[in-house]
Amino acid sequence: MKKSVKRRSPKTVQESQITIHHLVTPPDLNFRGFLFGGVMLKLIDQAAFVCARKHSGSYCVTASFDRVDFKDVIHMGELITLHASVNYVGKTSMEIGVKVTAEDFEHNRIRHTNSSYVTMVAVDEKGRPVPVPSLKPETTEEIRRYKEGEARYLTRKAETKKKQPK
Ligand SMILES: CC(C)(COP(=O)(O)OP(=O)(O)OC[C@H]1O[C@@H](n2cnc3c(N)ncnc32)[C@H](O)[C@@H]1OP(=O)(O)O)[C@@H](O)C(=O)NCCC(=O)NCCS
Image 1 (cartoon, helix red, strand yellow):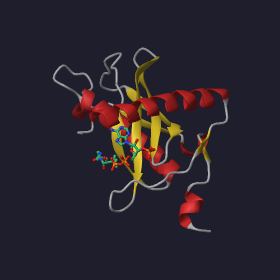
Image 2 (cartoon, rainbow, N blue to C red):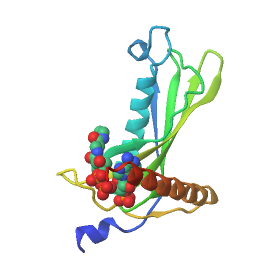
Image 3 (cartoon, helix red, strand yellow):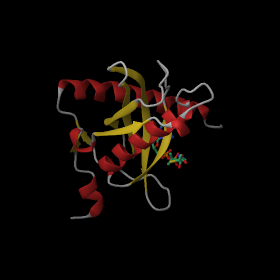
């Protein structure tokens, strides 16, 4: 079987779903003693990369981040958990949804601190976009995320087109 044909066979959401953890230590902190926003962006990017890499089977680059809201500060000693899964795939791009929680062991509390949609693009060794396998959403939740991801994908496409110089 040709490599390109094999890579386009559909994959489930579960096949590339990942969870990563990060314990907040002093190098992660800003001058007020809270987690730097940039550290959180890096963690979200890493989680999205691993998920996209697993789904596509190719190297991937970050094309864009949708809005990231910081709902609450995160302190030293808290455990950050990032859940990443593919919501939608286009031809060469994948929308990865990343949900972040922080666990405060002092008060035995887990809070949802951030969420983001990251668009990752599969590329070849020359950095050119390459096709990714299609996505087979199975559960009601996955089908809802797929439909919503498709709407955002089309909006991003339209916005990117508008920004291009004439
Ligand atoms: C992302 C990149 C590969 C896209 O290349 P390109 O030549 O513009 O490719 P295309 O216009 O053919 O687009 C390829 C896909 O990317 C998507 N895309 C391109 N720009 C995008 C953006 N700003 N936001 C979301 N998706 C984008 C397109 O919609 C298309 O998706 P599809 O194939 O699923 O329909 C290229 O712009 C790049 O290499 N950027 C730098 C990436 C980088 O350095 N990231 C940080 C470090 S990893």
